[in-house]
Length: 167
Image 1 (cartoon, rainbow, N blue to C red):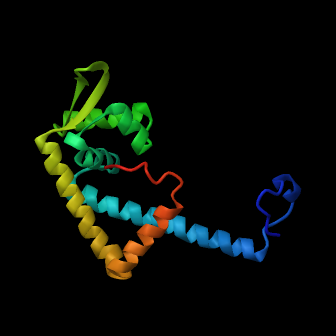
Image 2 (image 1 turned 30 degrees about the horizontal axis):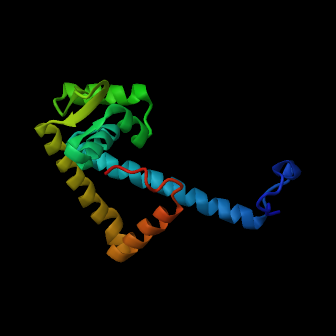
């Protein structure tokens, strides 16, 4: 009982997905759960090699690719999808480890900038190279460079907000 686009979902109450819908949903489950496990495994490699939790790596990678290795804290929050409190917590940990500094923007003291330190830049590069190696080993080896590029392009075409990225 495939629902037509624009059809009232209420009309479908009590109905079960037909075999075509079940197959589609099973494919979705394989895709999203496999991608989640792969991402977890890749970020676990980064954590083991570079000592950075996934959220810390995300912040450092964002700053490494940002102009001047610096960005407003609210931009980190918006771009990475963290809560304000979550961003602050990660930034606190990274600042305590000497990997980033927070300072007020001179032109607008209401804005706090997060900026990589030299140690933060080194940690970000180490983590990024670790991730690149893990991607080559686990993904590119299986798909081939062209297959990986095609997959990336396809997923980007499905992204509802393709311009919200780090860098």
